[in-house]
Image (cartoon, rainbow, N blue to C red; front, top):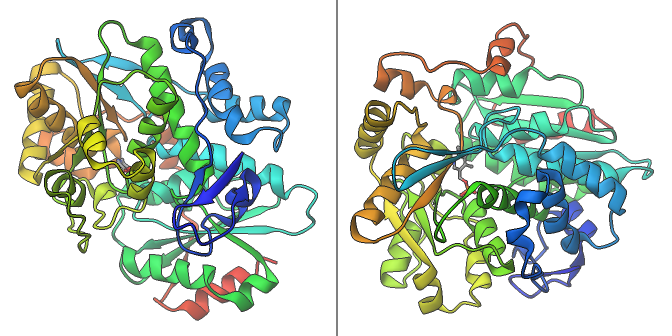
Length: 429
Ligand SMILES: *Cc1c(COP(=O)(O)O)cnc(C)c1O
């Protein structure tokens, strides 16, 4: 498969080149030259297939012979070897739980897949690859867990000191080995600026093979299609409405891609917090990025969603067609709190703040339209301290969280200073 840049000024790339490079030089995003169509019976046969088989069938056309089929099957098995249950909450609303992976958020899927692809491609290269990534919480944990122990690859994670939750910090800092965690005296934006400075440092890049593991990498984006098919396997009845809590819009873009390939979805709902650039766009056709506003669902605090261009590309920039397929909602922090309380009381179910934005958006849509649907529960409620504050008790911890408490935090505290980041990267080669 060839991948072109959405800015159309960089040359096309193979899957391997797109994964290793991350982003084309013209600052567009890689996008598949042709979208594979699944055969007409694929979605009827999901029940006969394991999740790993489904994943392989979905992803194989995007990779072709660049990873041999036997290894690709193993990568798929390792990527999806945990549960993806679809849980019904009431007559019309179900929830697809994407938080049973090692770091309790959906980003585990993309991170596990990408780390294994990068490991495959760097094998036998003799040269180490260093992945640099900034995180506001969830991404870093998923990347750390996904890449830990992958041979030939080191990961350098930058996170803002004091601004991630307790569990997120443990998930980031307790691996050691090839995972190096930098605790930066600064904000998430500062971390991102430092990571970008490293990736743009041509002198550094001449010494070490550097890449990023953020959500624009095709090896994180493409495998996120998998769980939409796993949901469909468990779905009975009319074609569902699918509600996606969104920040950078990678997840929704993956669902829309699956839909173009043949997955039945009647409507997507882009569930947003106060960062409403996409809901405003769908109402006005004007796209106006803004600085991010902090909210309770902080993994969705994005003012300029990087993956949105992929959604435009999927609809070939046809606004009416897109507005017909995607609805959007904006949910305030107050509504988010109320929904967490309400869903607990009504359904005896604990949502995290991101899932709560999804629930509120889907419910609001169903007040005016017929149908049934599911929302993506993108993270486990235990990851967000505010949930216990709202409910007045701590949600039950999964075993993986209890184990974290016994582990030793290993991080390097640095000032908001690029020189320090550069020195640490150079010390890894
Ligand atoms: C990253 C993240 C999101 C947003 O996903 P995008 O693909 O960036 O839209 C939503 N919820 C949680 C918990 C996340 O970690």
